Amino acid sequence: MTLGHSFESVLEAAKLGADWAWAVLYGEIAGPVTGFFRSRGVADPEEAAGDVFFELARGLVSFEGSEDSFHTFVFVIAYKRLQVESRYSNRKLRTALADRVLDRLHDNVEVIGVIAEHRVSEEVRQALEVLTPDQRDVLSLRIVGGLSIDQVAEVLNRGVKKIKVVQRRGMARVRSQLPTEAVLA
Amino acid sequence: MRSETAPREDMWSDLIDRDLDLLIDGKQPYNSDLAPLRSFVNMLGSFGATELSPGFPEDHAADGAAMARARLSDTPVPLSTPRRLAFGLRRRVTAAATSLMMIVGMTGVAWAADSAVPGDWNYGLDRALESIGIGAGGAEERLLELTVIRGTETVPLDDSGSRAESENSEVGLDNAAATVAATPRGSQRADDVAQGVSALLTYLADTEKAHGPTVSELAREFKQTQGSSGSNRPEASPGEDHRPDHAGKPADVGNR
Image (cartoon, rainbow over all chains, first blue to last red):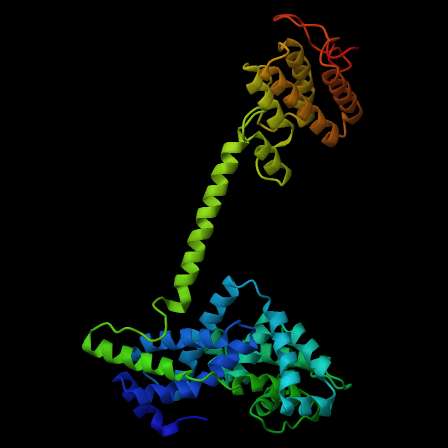
């Protein structure tokens, strides 16, 4: 869901301190940001998202740009927050990510249906475990954060070509864990 | 140099990238080989659709609006959510400061214990720290301790690295023998010296492969001598020669 043409007016209202505008902005990004942290195994995703909101509130007054730029801006903060979490946390993110996926498999009927259809539950768990940190960054930002390749490149401060390669290799790794003979090039 | 197949590979990569974009956007990829990835994309994407806690993110939105208004009016505003430092830094700064204090404290204790000699209150701590790799330890430190106990500078120590530790061990054994023989028995100091020499011999017997049998023999003799309360050992007088013979064994230690 995007705000589209109304984004500019919402942003201006937020800068002036309108409660409703902040509620709209945060409502727009709360799910993806919290989901991003959750997918990366952060212990308290909502607390981490709250930290991002706080930083956003401090920096929004100087922000100028489109809605896409706003999302990139938000995930630049979120990614820095993830790095802080990784630096100070003893948790193993790879394992945590796999655990989250397993939780999903048990809790989410829709996902269970999808997985059951392809009979890949265990294979998907294994696929997540074999991803490199770079691949998890890119795939999480792309799929959970909803960012484009260009936006991911900006968040991770890498080239677009590099991000494409990482995405392709990450997906190939996942694909190699799934049960059919065909494999990505 | 690029191969002739490079353009074809690039084109194939572009096709894959386009299909992956379609897949991530929830659309059908052209390449049917990618279809099984849909389950992975759906599952990972569902992380972003999880139900949020009540009041989240509304409370944060109220804070954001209050901060924006405060910035316009140039006045500070109290927040409903407990964040004053970025990314929860207060908690981490506190943890880091506590860790730093503990490290400094432990380093100080370890440093103080490192110079302890047998008989000091913290000698046991020194040995315990050495056993886990903290502090110098080894034959070098045992020799230093003997030097301190004797109150003389008879043990040559060479930190240049040019001399093998085994040479120091030989000298240490000589001095250990001389120390035991020269120290009056029945005093606290004698007990300390005996303890220090025992520690030295035991250490060398355990660690010095080159001198293992010899040192083991010395350690055994020394412990037997200590166990016999010294009644059958000759009393030594200052200045008397207690140097070992050429076999590296003390000439006048124990009931030989």
